[in-house]
Image (cartoon, rainbow, N blue to C red):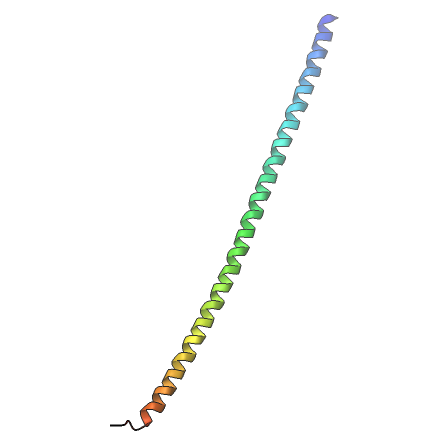
Length: 89
């Protein structure tokens, strides 16, 4: 009878050990999932920031091109007006 009690006690220990291991693995997986979610959120935020910076850069470039064209057109008009005038001697 004592052999049977020892086997039952050992089986209970195995079940307890298996439950502890299962809980440990679940906790580790939960922690990993949280870390991956945090990294994913960080990466997405950085990509959004980069997108905003690229949009701002494109706008700045567009403004510079427009400004350069306006100055170029103004210089061409001024140059043409100056060419039509008689220059003093």
